[in-house]
Length: 275
Image (cartoon, rainbow, N blue to C red; front, top):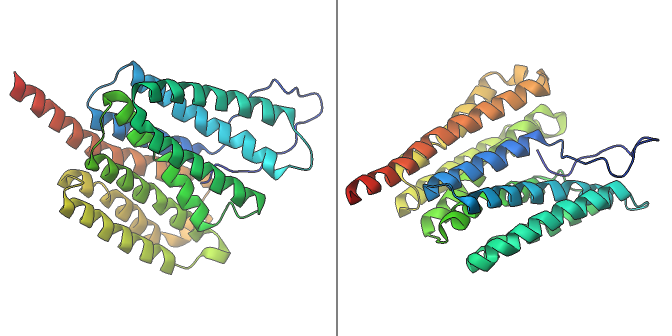
């Protein structure tokens, strides 16, 4: 699940004005679920929230054709350049407007730009499928959580950093489980180490007060998914990719539910107390 994927050259008769869309459906799920956790953290949805969602989506779409052009750098592809530039222009325009209202968003923008540069270098050297590059990619996509919250409320807190880390740790688990389907990376050891380490980090975030108990418990969905995969490992290695995508999507929805409940309950309680 990385945003840099191969795409065949434009067939004869196809024109540059045909839109490009990323085929990485799993990343759509990561982006949307992360964004909704950020919106739940904000406790409201306004016009800036909608703009932030469009910005995140356009930025994600811009990355796809631009990295494809890097992969096919021996020849210029007008379709990739036009649509990559258009998506980037939309993302940058909205980002500029939101920055004008909330300057602290600059730090998120710098993080996203750094991740894009790292991914571009990985694509250039044909290492986009490395574990570290995929972890950077997920961390960048999960920035949609603080983007939603900060753009909506204009404020930031340490708990928002905890939410971003939680999203990153949860979705990054797929980097290790999906690699179990490949013969070269089928060892369980990296997955075991990752999930144990991620669990300790989440517990640490809860202990420090960066996450509420129910929000931290949501990471348990990743552990349940992992142990289900271990239990049905032979099935998981040979099943259709659509079944893997379904498992990841259901897990993401189950992850979102307790987080949204916990965060929205806090906002509801605060409103009731103020009445």
